[in-house]
Image 1 (tube, rainbow, N blue to C red):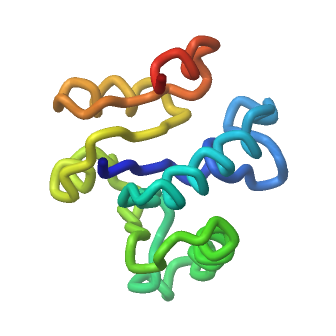
Image 2 (image 1 turned 180 degrees about the horizontal axis):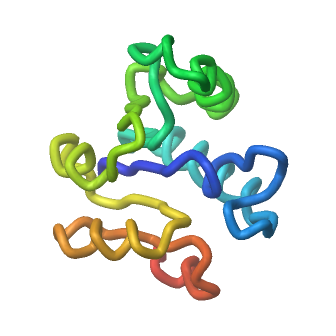
Length: 132
């Protein structure tokens, strides 16, 4: 299975909080889930709206570095990190032929689901029921 994870608000929280100001209490659980998928032989990706290496002239020119750090901790192959440079993720997910994507943004999760990609909205209290 090809599985991807959003970065901010899903695998990581800048300053420990998501955009609503709340901390994702299951962040470590989701990181452990990513590690399990890797260990079980699934192809695991990070797809993030952050700017990548090709946008070094942007004011947040080093925002990609933490993504590489977390990916390394998870044991993720660094070639499986995709930066959309603030664009919606759905086209990247389609191009990667992703089967399942974990996302904290409800609107983006809806757009992804409309493309017949299983989108797990991790802020839904029943998200765990969707992965078993």
